[in-house]
Image (cartoon, helix red, strand yellow):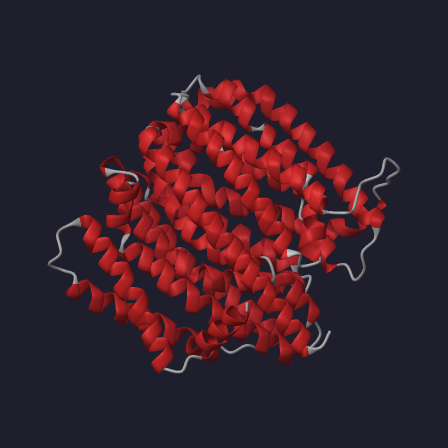
Length: 479
C-alpha cells in the first residue's frame, strides 16, 4: 500500500469514525437527557452495579480474537468460523453461570430486584458473541462507514424504546431493555452488512494458533474492565445505589465526550499501524501524526466539557444531578490524555506484543485497586482524583517507555506534539472564564462559553498555522 493510499485510507477512516462517533454521542446525549430527567439516580445505580459482570463476560467471550484476526496476514474462512463458534459457546456458558449466580449478586449488593434484572441484562452477552466475528471482518477491512450505519441505527431504535418505557414508568427496566435491544440490533445489522457467513463444519485448530496472542488480550481487557468498573462495585457495596448513580452519570458524560474521539481513533489505529509494521521510521511518523490529531481534538473537547460541566448538567438533566459535576470534571482531565494511551496500546498490539499489553494492565489495575481501597473512606471525589492521577502520571509513563523501546519515539518529541494544543486550550478557557464571569443565567452562560471557546480556538489554530487544523478543513470541504 502506497503512502498516499495509506494516508487517504486513514483519513477516510478517521472522518467516518469521527462522524459516526460524534453523531452517536449526540444521539446518546439526546436520549440520555430524557432518561436522566425521568428516571431516578437509584435506577441508574442498580444497572450500574451489573456493568462489571457484563464487561468481564464480554471480554471472556470475545477472548481477544478480534485483534488476533486483524493481525493475521490473510483472511481465512476457517479462522473466522472457529472464532464465531468459540464465542457463541463461551457466551452461552457464561450466561448460564451468571443466570445461576444472580441471587448471589443480589445478596452481595443487598438488592433483591437485581436477580431478575441481571438475568435479562446478561442476555446482551449472547447477542454480542453472535456478532463478534462479523465485527472483526468489518474492523479488519476498515469498513468504518458500514460500522457507523450499524451503530447509529441500533442506537436510534434502542433509544426510542428506552425513552418510551421510561415515560411509561418502567424505571430501571427502561435502561435494561434499551441495552438489550441495542446489543440485538448491532448483532443483526453486522450480519446484514457482512457478506461472510459461518458454517457448521468447523474445528478449533485456528483458535489454538491464535490463543497465545489472544489470551493476553483477554486478560488485559478483563483487568481493564475491572479497573474501569471497580468503583461501582465498591460504591454499591460500601455506599448506596444513589452514590453509584452519581458516579455512573459523571463517568457517562465524560465517556460520551471521549467515546467520540476514542472510537474514531480505535477504528483505524491498529489496522494502520499493522500496514507500516516493520518500518520503524514510518511508524514513528504515523504515530506522531495521529497523536497530534488526537490531542488537537481531545484537549479542547474534554477540557471544554469540564469547563462547561456545571451548566451542561443543570440544563441537560436537571439540578438533582449537579453532585456528579466534580466527578465529571475530574474524569475529563484523564479523558483528554486517554487518546495518547490508546494510540500507544494499538501500536503495541500491532507489533504482537500482547505480553506487555497484559502486564501493564495487570500492574496498573492492581495499583489502582490498592489506591481505591486506601481512599475508600475519603469519599468518591478522592477516589476519582487518585485514579486520574495514577492514570496520567504512572500509566502513560509506562506506555511511553515501552513504545519508545519498540520504535524509538522520544518523549521530548511527543511533548512538542502535545504542548501547542494543551496550552492553546487552557489559554482559551482562561480567557472565556474571565469574560463570562459576570453572566448569571445558566443558559446564556453555557451558550457563550461554548461559542466563544470554539471561535477563539479555531482562530488561534488558523493564526498559528496548525497543519492538522488546515488538513482537517481541506478534507472536510472536499467531502
